Every structure is written in structure tokens, then in C-alpha cells.
Image (cartoon, rainbow, N blue to C red; front, top):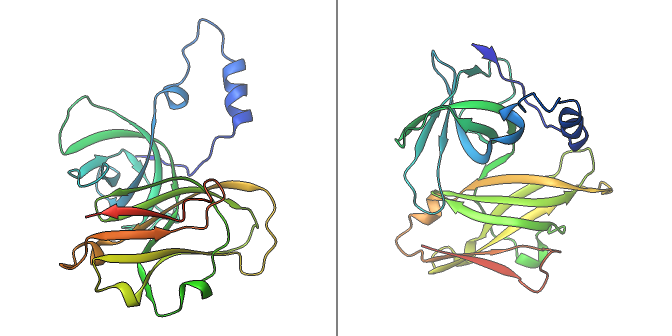
Amino acid sequence: MKKAWLLTISLIALLFAFASCDKQEDIDRAYTDYRYDIVTYLGQNDKGAVFEYLGHGDSVAVRLQSGVSFDGEDIKEHQRVLLRYDFADQLASPSRNINVYGCNAIFSDSLRQTTMTPDSLPAREVKLRSLWRTGEFINLHCQVEYTGKARTLMLVADGKTLNSDTVYCYLVHDLRGEQGTFWRDCYASFNVGALWHKPTFKCMRIVINDLTYPEIRYRDFMK
């Protein structure tokens, strides 16, 4: 099995690849035909790394079988990752073979509970790009200020609302005293299954300190 490299292709590298191609040469499919999805890493089998893909809402899970190995890489089983890949077959089935072009670990956590008041929760600004649900996961794509140091990024539920039909949840973001510099992309995925399956639950209301749409204080996800 070939080794999978955790990589991020910069725009400069991509432009260089295009500029160096002769008109008679084919551009590598890794640069042109691929998908970016947040998926769950399930571990290794005798063929390679295995992932689980969930579409929007309550879509049926699709098993993604690769031919690459993550032995020795810093990715744990059941961790959520950002996968760059394409399908190696044309079969519309619950199990697909894929070609992997890149795989990056992202913030991967479960919904937490707090008794703190919402005003006391750290809520450093983010620039929201997308917030969506796939099965039991709430997925986040945003931009955050780069510090080069560890930060806190969590989704927490207000314990006082847990038994209500609408549960208030807050994106906790803390630079831990570091100074932010430039903005960069950030991906995160939070397992909210324990809440989603509560009989009394009907709506998850997520509050985000968002610079992109500051007038929108929260986003609702209906059961």
C-alpha cells in the first residue's frame, strides 16, 4: 500500500503546476477532479484506510475504502477529518472505492454541557463560512485568527435548556491569551447525537459570534 501524506497544496504550488504543464500534457486529476468532505476515519483494513461519509441531514452513511495507509500518522480512529479525494468507481452503493489526495485532522469533539452563564463563555470572533448537519454531527467551516498556538474551540449546551424543546448551544472560542494575526480557514465537527436523540428535543439553536453576518445571532437546526 502506498503512503498517504497529510498535505495542503498552496495556491502558489498549484499555479506552478499549471504553468509547467505543456499543452499536450494532461493535468493530474488530483488538481482538477476531487471532492472536499468532512468524514470519519474508521481505521485500517488489509486494503487501506477506511472512512465514513454522511450527506446533509439524515442521509445514509457511505463507506469509503482507500488504498493508502495512515500508519504512523497523527490521526486516530473515529476522528473527523477533512478528506480530499475522488471516487475510483462509478457504483452508487453504500460502499465506494476512492483515491485519496490529502487528509487533514480537524477539531473533532462532542457537544459539551455547561452551567456557566452565556455571557461568561469565551466567544472570540470567527468569520463564518458554513454551518451544516450530517447525521449526528454539526460541522463548521469558518476563519479564525492565526496564533501558531493551541486554542479552545468547543460547542457547549446551556444546561438550563437541556430539557426544553429548544436547546441553546454556544460556540466557545478562546485564543488563550495569544495575539491573533492573519485570518485562516478552520474546520471543526461536533457529535451532537446524545442531544439529537432526546425525546423532548426539537431544535438546536447555535449562537456564534460571527463577523461575517453579525446581525444573525444564532442558527437553528430542527429535528
